[in-house]
Length: 479
Ligand code: SF4
Ligand code: SF4
Image 1 (tube, rainbow, N blue to C red):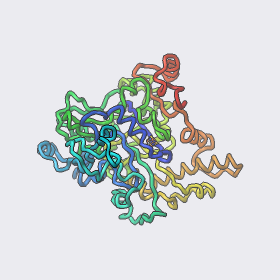
Image 2: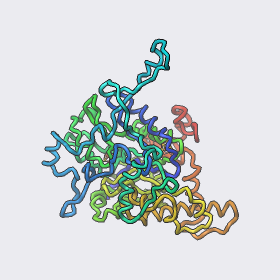
Image 3: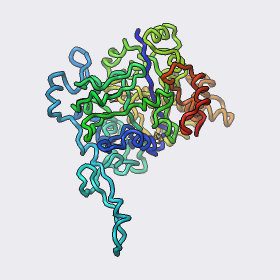
Image 4: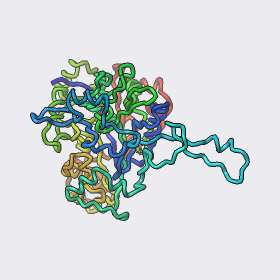
């Protein structure tokens, strides 16, 4: 056993408003420079839809992530060393500007500097790449809020679910819609790291954050197609690749990422997970793609187990981090309560950003009857969610939805004095789930140990004493 620590995130999709605040605050913090215009370290996709970049889930096309060879060993989909070396000079799997979009601005100056005319001046779009005027026909949120059924129909997961016989309805009155915020997953088995010929991408030993050294990057771009989530971007100004840093300077101060901190729906939870490095390869090599999410859960270690604590200490994990892992909201949601699932675990990168699948707008009917077996009748088809979160296996999604319904029916029983329905968890646990999912304050949603070795109590005390910026301090705007 070799225990290491990983900062991880869970997003509760039921609460996402699709407001894009996370994307904008991230953009202002990290990608507001020349060459980064098209980069969205955090983006929010409308599902069903094609996502950003367009069709990023089509791994047969992009060759992202890992697969197994004839002997059941892991290999990059991009090919072996020789194939990848050849592709350094011409890579047909590289996404192009059409897959992202040509970034543009507007002739804002015209609005104030145009001379007196019969008509109002117009700010016309202008390409940020060529500087020329352009007609806009595609952008990063073009299919936002189902703005075109043709994009919904092109959703890879929708097509896959229908191929399994789901018969998802596409009439306007039957259509479903949800948001899917995405960042880099800071994977335990990152394909981007393995594909980089310069060794410029690495996983930080202390917190598992995957970063790109701008000094070491030589701009080969092998990481861009290798990431199956398309979360590495090439900066055309500096000729180097860039990606989400999980806001590591904030993490080092004990603060969550800026996308999490500013999330209007308070959908994000961040905390420490302990995991066994010795189990990573076997989990990623799990033969049945539908079992990989389960294998990842097995890699996560119980932070109260004395053997785990001893191994963590031996591997340099500070006591404050072990303490944080024992009080981690993320561990509770993923491991203890089984409410979160990874996005496309079948890519075999072992993502460390997990999701609580959304229930459905017609949940009230299910909750009222307290029948936990009705997940399949909900408006968001389980078959579709299963393509996203469990490689097409509906059972794990069904199990999560039934647990979420159990929380609702328990709270309803409490409120209206109805009999308590039978549930997998004790009423006190359902109360705790309700608090964390519905009304948790900032210190409950985020438990990030600062780089300095402090316990959580000491950190809270220090934050109270010295404070951070008003929007970030514990007890700040939303505590
Ligand atoms: S999601 Fe992030 S860590 Fe995982 S392969 Fe892509 S860029 Fe690398
Ligand atoms: S800020 Fe939060 S609620 Fe708004 S889109 Fe992002 S994840 Fe969803």
